[in-house]
Length: 392
Image 1 (spheres, one colour):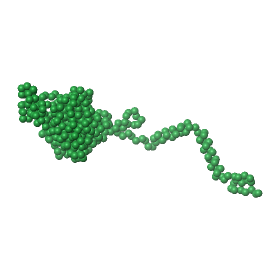
Image 2: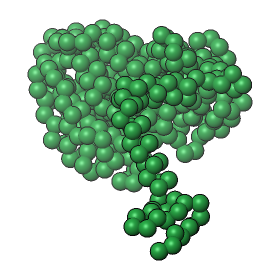
Image 3: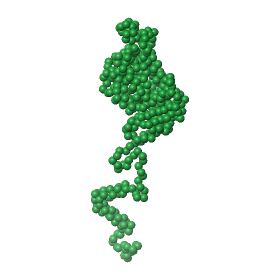
Image 4: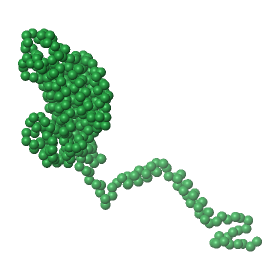
């Protein structure tokens, strides 16, 4: 048989020759297998590490961007500091008679933070920010006689600030004696709250500071963003404290931390001096709220309105005979509790909302004092005294 040729390679008799392409592919496969065996895992890791470093290393032609204000380089040992966003505050403006001043504009206000004039970015009157209100009632033994009137006043206040189940406002109910109790969590249903109010009973002990601290930490701290809500505590109390684990300063500091504004209504018996009224006055002023003392009256034996006190009508025991203990006369005085709560509700509904971006915009944990000036003649301005520049 003659020899046949195909291409450059002869096809000899008795032997099968594979095509050229198949031989090349097999040779390439063999080389790859040998390479994988010879290259150790340590060598591969070294190559990967080298490639990773090369990828992380910035190009000389494109330098890394400079860090923004308020942050530090990731290689620095200093912590990254986050910037403060917009600060939103509710502002009440009252005239000389204590009535809300309405109709003011953005140009009528100046805002100062730590003495520095700020630029107002937002100013609004309608709709106001929704309220998160804590209604705290003193149910200790000393408040036993006033409790029925407190219940009536609290019910009227609830219906005034909620104005139906679709209200954007929410209220929680808390009582305190020796301990604090959340009787009803946040709700916008006035019927539910009213039912809980009617079932309240007086107990023993008196721990006012613990009650304020508890309300702020357990409820107000979780009541939504402080920029988008108004946090308010309404406190009915005589201001006395005999067994709190927390001090006045600790309670006030916690109120500052959560941005709670406290309105206090004194319920101490009329005709008697009560040094603890100063406690209510101070904690209200220090949080941007107000203190009301509806049971105060000028000295005199005004039996028509039920004013009875030491030494006015012979022995103090005669007060019992005249019905003071049972509430015959005191009812006309205690009804002013409702008037005070109504005044608070009216004030809250006539607030302005002011927003600004602070010039000192770092969250460094410091307390920033706020002062607001209104151009209205004789105006009294109420707002929270400041805030802690810390992430909540």
